[in-house]
Image (tube, rainbow, N blue to C red; front, side, top):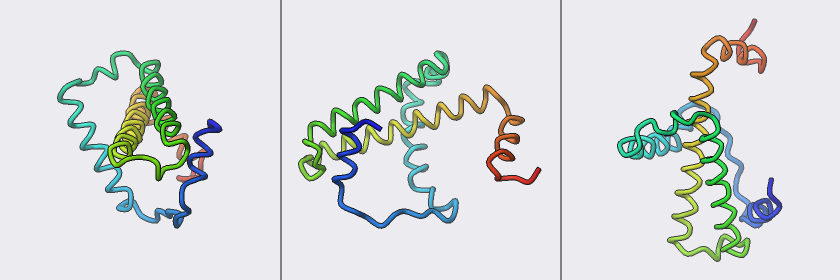
Length: 128
């Protein structure tokens, strides 16, 4: 992890660690991602798929770089961010999540269900 980003996250107030125990606990973040995806899909369509994996990495990298700029603007202290900057940070973070998910979707389609089955076995999510 980038040193500056690590310092920023370490400066955040300590909060109770999230422990997801059911699929329903993922619902709100994924719902937000889906809403954003659907809104952007109306304007862009599946343009992200046309350029394949390199395009996905470029988008993910751009969002990561933008988060770093936002962290530097705060002088590594989240309390220095205005409400507008916090909204911008959240927007960038959710964009990063959506692009990461789209990349996963692209790879899933590329390799197919058989590789997913093998992966599930490999990581212990399914008995042989």
